[in-house]
Length: 632
Image 1 (cartoon, rainbow, N blue to C red):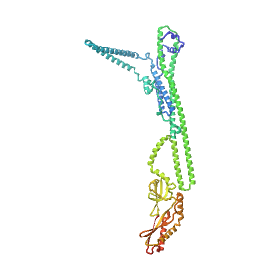
Image 2 (cartoon, rainbow, N blue to C red):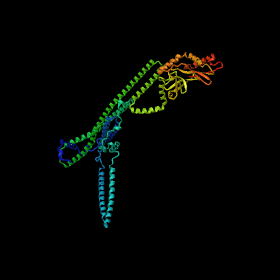
Image 3 (tube, rainbow, N blue to C red):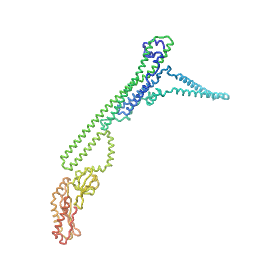
Image 4 (spheres, rainbow, N blue to C red):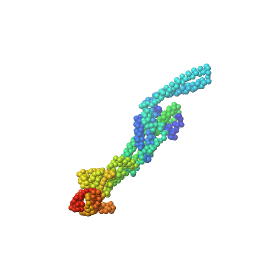
């Protein structure tokens, strides 16, 4: 209500009186008094779309924080972004409540019709209530009435029931019509704001008082990353992941700045409108006091109109002011998150370069030691076989060292590596059993008592001389023929080294011994001087034995030294065995492996010559004898 005391108190007595004085404007016919939106609908909708897109981008960024610090920042950023978009829709709804600009003197031509329909609907609802009360009263009276009174009451109840049904139908029809007329226009600003708001349920007005969105649970976030215990692969993935996240935050910071600038642009027309209200209020406050009742009523209507105008502008301006603080808060959290990611990126990059440098230095050191070992082997190991073994062993050690170093440098999760290695080892052991056994057998074959190139061995029934011992295969020059005089067949037999583990697969001379035992058997029939025959035959064998005696004794000595055993030196020996037909003399003698056929032939010839030159020793002219050379 307007009162004279308010007009006389124009010079800013108190804050609320000053605000009320600002509402005194020019006459209502002035276009400046007419309530209208200070902002175009297109600008409001564009701002809402920009805020909604920015909110969705924030939600995409805060999905998977990497550590506890980022989890806290992500929760705070999500909370401030949600409050920002809520305030944006609150501002838009306040703007939609302001009638749009119009040139008509009556901006709402259907207002009187709406009021009439509302009054009719209220009257119909009141009539329904009255009819319901009348029906209840009649039903109560019918319970105790009888005779003619009961018939009259039933007739009245039927009439009231008809009136009740008619009033109820009229009330429902009027309510439906009012709801249809009051529904928002699909092309209006309020309908478009509601459509945008449905896409972001969290921004609905019913969610304002809801519990703040929880910080993303730690269990759903990515596991903590420790660059000091990560490999090259993990560090490289971390560098690219953090770099991508930093780029997302940079773009989000740019969108935040753009949203803040747009909000500042929207605040300019609102500030101008409020300043215009203040200017007009100051002008009205300085008007002289009037005693005209009509003038006072006109001023009261202007005050009421400007009060509504001020509330509308305040309802639009306040959310923008609060939103500006929330946008600044979101921007500061984005920049803080960007700083944390930058520190993490620098740490991961530093450890990555350190890992690569250490890997390069370690590889150079391994190759340098390998080259020194190769040169030392070539220089100091003169045995070609031993040299080759050392060189092969060097390659194996270097390969294993390089492979292990590369795996340890690139692998991040050693637990997963151990599990994978276990299953892989089991599969490889089953699939490559023969290959693995061949590699293991190689070290037995080239060991101290292993085979050497030139040794005569028997492998799976094949006799030959060793031509080469590889990491996986054994090569033999096949020997064939009857008896001990074996000759090369010209073929090379290849066996996998795994044959070494088969039962009775290989036969080989004792290490350091290159001779075997042979025997010559002379069988006699009848009577003869067996003692003299034995002495003379043994003397003939010993005469031939003397030619290579030193070689055999030297081999035997080396054998004793290497095996640390003490055995009797080999020498020819004889035995006599009597049979039913006569007797036989057996003379055993050692012979070099490569001279078996030659020595057997010479001993046989010498025995024949001896017996033919002195037949009396063999029992006379009719005596018979038989000579045979066998393995000793």
